Length: 242
Ligand SMILES: [Zn+2]
Image (cartoon, rainbow, N blue to C red):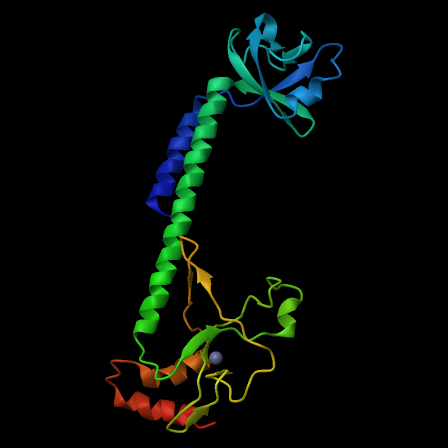
């Protein structure tokens, strides 16, 4: 998502970060209470004492210290957490600001994705509005055994899968004739049962995606509403002659 919003957000984030201490490593200076990992694991809080001692609220130890004593002022409340096997601490207000920023960013990203999906839906609707298709139709992919193998989405759909116009009722027009339950681009009933192809818009509502099969698109030319160029008619009549 490369838009001006993102770059200004990026800048804001970087500026905020400049004034932040970030995560400071915590070192041990003696016996560690056995319950410590359990307390720190999910993240806990404490306060910095003189000499960089990290005094946790939930466990009694004076044996945790900032790796660099001067990085966080004594009296500062801190958030203490594990990162891998290492313990870190960070000023609590800084941590909370970061959390808020992350949430804001996630929300913006979620909205951008939803906007994009709505836009895709509108594009698909506009696509079909161009046509006057004289029979009942749907959109379907071609089920392929190869689609279930490596590099597929695991749903019978390979990366290069295209959407076809599926003919739901038989028709014949000019030199093109199809029986019900077939693809516009291929004569005959397909070997694999087709499934209606649906995409989800920004509200997770299903819609029919655009047709992307080149042959299907060529054949659909004849049903374009404002097809001013008569040359195209002749072309598609020829293309249909297979
Ligand atoms: Zn097709």
